Length: 334
Ligand code: RIB
Ligand code: CA
Image (tube, rainbow, N blue to C red):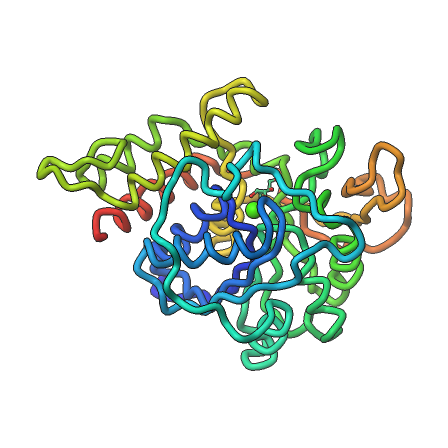
């Protein structure tokens, strides 16, 4: 592995899989986690900001700047998903209240200011509705050229949706924001890398994976160690993911969890984890049944240049090897 550390800005709606992505980022020696911005989605923005800081403190990274963004979608009322991530967004887990302060900067301002401070260096990884990124690019139209890359967990480009029949959650919460972002990025080789459900639903975390992570940390899957101590990171994973796996049992008929966000974060660090195809994408904003759909023009009927590199295949095995190793070692060190 190269000793290059990639500067990464994360925008999230922490949520359970968001929290796993944050743990993976902190655990990755090839990732320089510059800052985190919070968007309303899985739970309200204030709870997202609380969860994000609490998880970073759990991982020993209370130094990372965390900013809160807009607290509602651009035009629609906020819809959250307590049935998926729990009323507070971290399943059955209990974490100590966050002690680290929130950044005085807003999320969109932080994105713009950090991109301007380090032109061409920052990878922005979005794990949430695109509200903050839309506001950022409206404030700074040059943002696509300032970022090294935009990596989006969002949309579904060849597969069924997970929210409505053809829509994916992050885009569905704020379709207008997604439309703005897909229209603003894409020219002159600023195409975002988009991981939709097509590939993120290959990242199926199973109880055996959790057992391997716990074993790597020297404890049982519920976090108890041979010395009677409880490993707080493993205990968190056990409690958060038990809720998430119960959800998947009901809705996806398997006891496991699609960990969408960690795959996106891992791909931002190492794009060889996926294979992509350039395609023109636009977002449906006025469909009776399809508002929030990411419409991909695979047959080029629109005659418009591609504006997104869509991930069409992912190496899930290689991702899980890395996820288990890095998160297990992080837990072992806490
Ligand atoms: O559709 C999956 C996405 O929606 C993930 O980012 C998950 O955290 C939820 O926000
Ligand atoms: Ca998310």
